[in-house]
Every structure is written in C-alpha cells, then in structure tokens.
Length: 75
Image (tube, rainbow, N blue to C red; front, top):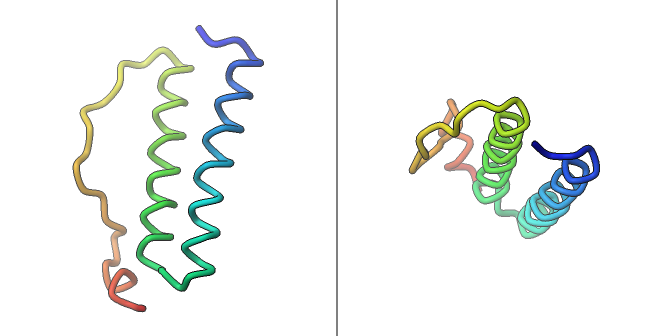
C-alpha cells in the first residue's frame, strides 16, 4: 500500500515527465507525438489508480490510437 506522500510523489513524477514531453511536442508542431503522450499519461494514471485501489494490473496494450485517427494525420 502506498502512503499519501508516496502517492503524491509518484503523481508529481508522472505529471512532470509527461507534461514536459507534451509541451515539447506541441512547441515543435508534432501533434501526433503530443497526442501519444496524452494517451500515455492517461495509461500511466490508470495504472497508478489500479495500484492504489489494489486491482491487479491489466495486460499491456501494444498500440493505442485515439478514436479518430484523422487527428494523427494532421501535421
């Protein structure tokens, strides 16, 4: 079980890393990379939520795409 301080530290670590990557991709005009980073952030937060709730980890997903992959083709 994670303590409150451990949970806060993990949330801070995840958010800083991912938001830095998202910001860099947006500034460079790399929409698909930014979207992939957002998806990755959601996946990491869901895994953390499952761990805190005591649920077993789900099988890894090899490729995650937004529902509307036309967004990925815009550059």
